[in-house]
Structure formats: structure tokens, C-alpha cells
Figure 1 (tube, protein in one colour):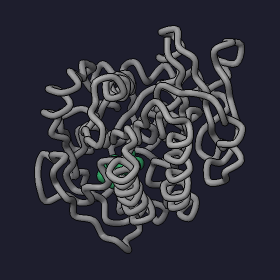
Figure 2 (cartoon, helix red, strand yellow):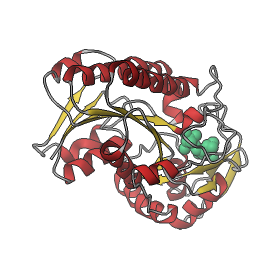
Figure 3 (cartoon, protein in one colour):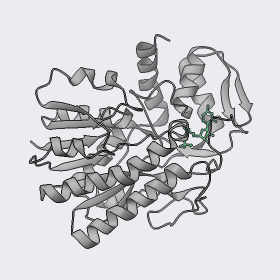
Figure 4 (cartoon, protein in one colour):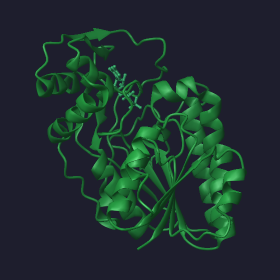
Length: 322
Ligand code: UDP
């Protein structure tokens, strides 16, 4: 049985990861400031003696002092606003959690003298990619001052910081580049395509396809993403980067029709211009090349989009009374 620390463990992916690690008998400490994560996501673990929660902002250094002397097998570093609406709203916090916050996580690893860090980066580091599908070796096509830059560039900075600590401090750090993920514990108001379309469908409101919906994404059900992160912590190599996600690419227009059908909704699929609270430079195509994760981590996402959506709809109905 292992001892894990998860920054951002009250968030969407973090709470699913916490659940899986607790279910398999491990001990998990979550650090989260609840800026975009939610207490509701971790309430089910409160009675578990192997679960610990520290409400703190990892930009400060106080939280690390509270954990002083503890040895973690793996620190999963997920803390950061992650949906475009969230990071566009919290630009400074996003820049700081990925820079100063990541520095504090790496210093904690250094002080503890054992274990590893899995840093969760993002497919956004590829920007609006000119290479398809995206391999880990692709350098990306990012606007350094665009409306997404607080996220893209701070994640790129964090990757560079991780690599510096691997090269100069000989620490064991691995990087996951997560692609679009969906499933239970998503926030209703996070502005992501899957949450928006499910809520709109269940309320029979127009399904808001931005632009013409020709842009593509590749969607991973959260249990597959969580399995990828755990596989990375067990089989990944120091200083290596792995795409984690699903490699079935589809248009946003298709997503709208699949979700409409799965909910049995009469809602109209309605193309609209990009709203003001959505950052510009929307990547037009996104699909991971998973060869490295498949061969080195034995990662194999198994949940189809249709099945994953069918599992996700009851969560939205129950949690938000829809
Ligand atoms: N999108 C959309 N309607 C919505 C929300 C999102 O058409 O109500 C599109 C968005 O423009 C993007 C894709 O869906 O092309 C995925 O957006 P999301 O915010 O989920 O994540 P991203 O991949 O951009 O980080």
C-alpha cells in the first residue's frame, strides 16, 4: 500500500484519482484551495481514516511545512484551474499555481528525498497544432500573449521547471499531457463542452455549438485518464512526457448530436459565435498520438464516447437535480 499526495485533489480529475487510490487501499492526502475544486467532490472520503485533507493554496509555502517529514511514494500535481472559462476568469492564479505552486511541489519532493512527482500538463501546450495527431516530440504552436496564454505558457513554464529539476537536481519527475477528459465530478458551470451540452440537453435549451462546430477534440472518460496517471506513476520514466487521453477524434457538432441523442432531448443544436467569456485562439484540431503511453505504460483507454456519456448523464441529473 502506498502513500500519495494529490494537489488539486478536490477537482474533477483529482477527486476521481483520489477515489481510485483509496479504493485500492492506499493513503491519500489532498491539498486544495477549493478555488475551482469542490468540497462536495471529497465529502464521500471524509470518514475514511486513510484520507486527509488540507485546505491550502500551494502558492504559499505554509502547506508544505505542515507536511514536513512525510514520505510520499508519488505526488500527483494537478492543482490549477483547467477549463478555458475557469483559467480565463482566474488568469493570475493560473499563472502563479503553475509557476510558484509547481516550484513549491518540486522543493517538497527535494526535501523529502524520496518518491516521485507526476506533473499534469496539458494538450494546450501544443496550442493550435500544425501536426496531427500530436506526438510528445511536437513543440507546439502557441500564441505567447493570447487569451489562452495564462494556461498554455504557465504549463509550458512548469514543464521546463520540471525538466530543470530532473537535470540539475536529479529528481524523479514525470510529465503527463492530459487531453480532454469528462465524467462524474465535472463542475456544472465550468464552461466545458461536455458539461454545457449535457446540462443544455437535460434542460431542453439550445445546445451552443461555437462557430460551426467543425473544430475537433478527442475525449477520454475520466476512469481511463485516471488509469493513465496511475500507470505513469508506476511505469513511467524520469524526465519523460506522456500524452494521456483518448485518440478517437470527433467534431464538436458530432458531440452535440451524440449528447442530444443520449439524453433523449428535444433541444435544438444551435451554432453561435464564440461568447465573450471564452478565450480566443480555439485550437481547431486536437488528437493525441498515444503510441508512447501504449507501449511504455501499457495504457489502453477502453471507454467509448457513447458509453462514457451514458455513464456521465446520471451524475449531472443527480447532483444538480436536472
Ligand atoms: N465548445 C462549444 N460549445 C460550448 C463549449 C465548448 O462549441 O458550449 C467548443 C469549444 O469552442 C472547443 C471545444 O468545444 O472547440 C472544447 O472546448 P472545452 O472548453 O471543453 O475545452 P478545450 O478543449 O477548449 O480546452
